[in-house]
Image (cartoon, rainbow, N blue to C red; front, side, top):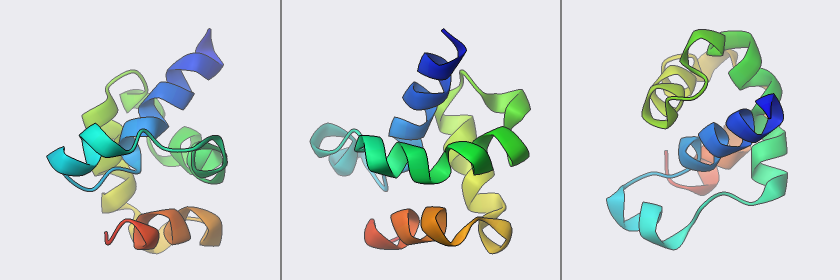
Length: 76
């Protein structure tokens, strides 16, 4: 159940706009790329998709290389 919450939060975390929200839910590989970063930096926000996205963006300089690539691939 906890993994599902993390995966759901990360699905939104990799989206860059409302239009992208409708088009892209984040692939499993994208979710996997950011799951450790979400747990590390955004634990208190898990379950709140928008807050996780904001948290990851706030911590962008400290994100893993793989998670940074996810954000970059979405123009973020």
